Length: 328
Image (cartoon, rainbow, N blue to C red; front, top):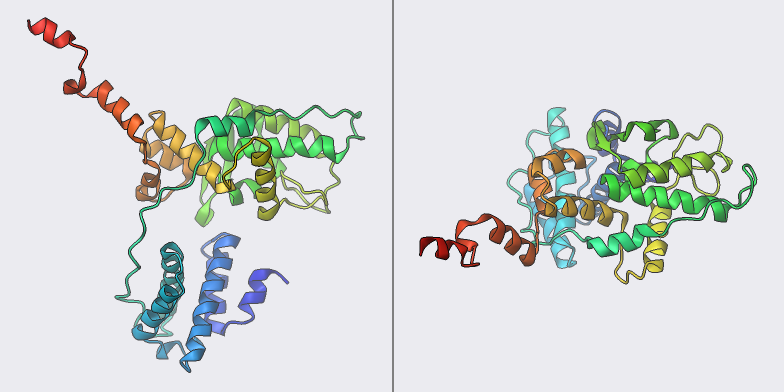
């Protein structure tokens, strides 16, 4: 039984049907569906304390939703997590309203908590190079007899190059099948949120790393019917936890003391592009963001970078004396 099925079994029929609709009709990712399921289950647990339940959605009031939000605040929950939970409830009740299961939306008028202005975590360029520069050794054994110690460093290198070089979400990278990758084209087609496809360019180092991994991937006995690009030691598709552990080990080996998550490489990709002068709209397309406001979170250039841009572009910022000499 999957984790989503397990959670859904604890929910009333209405929310369970909503989660199925979210997954199969809207094409939401497994991670999104699981997060929404947990959020709705938490709300249902809160309702039980009030003698209410989502089995009778028409009895849910705005005051109950506001009380749930207040209870999260008292637990010192991060405001971003609170906003996500409220978003899950809004989606649920909008769905129930469309189906005429409720006469009005109890989330109407309930505002999200004011968000902290936090910049996405990221690595600087030197840290990124330290993480990616180490090249795995070529397999020492003849083809067909290579050991895991020879093979999996090639997989790990290819995965990290893909996450940083193309800015993929970890779910997008791990969701790729081996036939999705054609290094000779220089691009990869990924399935993003909401089942939206986009084409993303591959860096030269990523193409090289992927080619080396694909050449030895067949030496990992895949589970029956498994087509995943990135395989674990048991021949099944690599999962998020395994990928996070791979990155942590590589970061430690590179001397990076801060915690690094797979999503931090995506943040680094976006930030480094923008600091290098890339167009915000182009970065939005590469990241697969539906809204430009999401991409704008990455525009946190440091003061030195802003000063360089100012000095290079603003007419009154040139203090080399040349203009004064011309006027004299």
